[in-house]
Length: 273
Image (cartoon, rainbow, N blue to C red; front, side, top):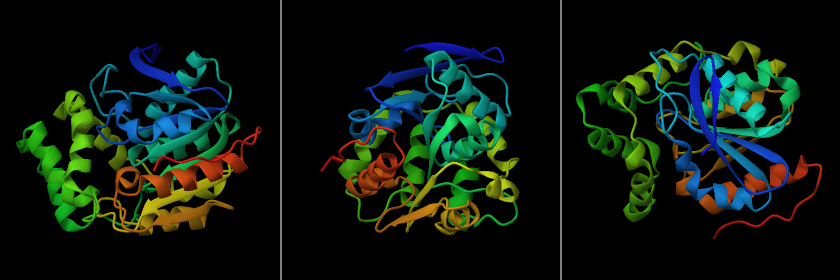
């Protein structure tokens, strides 16, 4: 797995596929390996470049907090290391926040922008339901396994089979974050907002959200789509925060169709069934 250094911190990244570059930025406490369900379909048409955000996976865990703009600069450093001037950018949850900041700080490096199950922070953000907030705040007293199990009702739709959820946990389990790293990323989220700056995003944007998301309620996706000029909103039914697991075929179809519209070379859309 290649590594680059940004501000003295080693950031691990990897790439799969060929074609126009597509930067993948994962969410709070999740490693790049968590893209496993979506990435194969994307890599058939695009050169996917995924990084472990600082503090997780194989990247360094410096003292926190980890501000969102710093994590956006980590992503820029990865593109530099990959020899990529500009890319399509797809971020999920906290990765969607990093992607918004990336689009604001490096507008010439963004070919198109996909914001999944994310929010813009600030006082106008739609807050998680109280039980979800309590779960996040109680993590410090839990083991990593207990924390992962406690999150399930808030990030998966009730219709998703348990064996499918267990597949996700099996991928994540070797990379469960240390509590210090989770807190450092969470501090970055809490201190950040883009709501007042969304109208400055110029990249073609797809906002995709699950309609049953209890951790980042769908009103957040609606607000982002309303504020970014020309943004498209896709709301997935029977999908929660991890919509890529709840509704993989519908998610992949929406994402690939959007990417196709904004790619220099037109590609045929095929999705995993």
